[in-house]
Length: 158
Image (cartoon, rainbow, N blue to C red; front, side):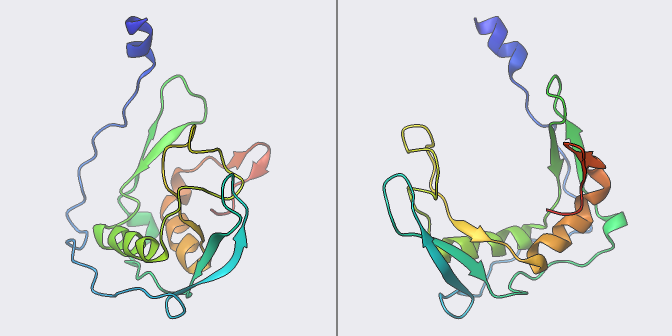
């Protein structure tokens, strides 16, 4: 059995951080409900009937706008799992810090909308509907690494 487990466990290759990325800096903005994000609705989960669904103020996350064709993203295909891959270096440390700080201000719930229960899903969740000011810069960086189509349809965004 241990031999089977060894054969099926895979870890993404270590990827060196690009040298041109901006050094990590502390997020100084204190994100606030009503000012930086809002609840657009509440949804039902397995245990709660009022799980908040958030949306952020457009443009809230400050992205580095380096040319997408020169962005240092890399792709590692997962062996023996058709279509599975890991993307690395998609976000700068500062972008990660902003996303984390905003999601922490929104708050995490033990439950999630229409989700598996805590007996299966052992994490907390923050349901955040990302707008085009968040999804577009990310998609522009990774588009060249994505398959041209998935399930018979063209890949056009995230």
